[in-house]
Length: 72
Image 1 (cartoon, rainbow, N blue to C red):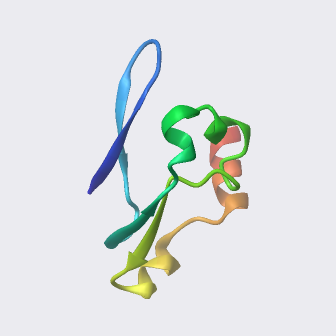
Image 2 (image 1 turned 180 degrees about the vertical axis):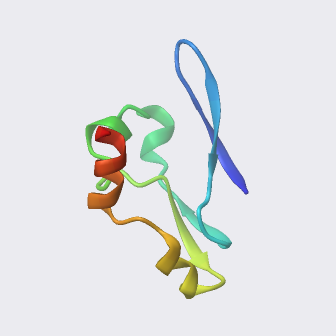
């Protein structure tokens, strides 16, 4: 399910949660400074999610796998 939109000069794209659950916290710092995500996406999280099914974590990539896909 979408939880937000990322906009750039050329396009706008929906942001999807990769797991089921409820958003319980939003990083308010990103409202005024969305560029913080580009500076350090691990430090500058967007939302905290209370997951419905922890087994869904097994389906996600880790940072190394994601970096490999981005560099291919």
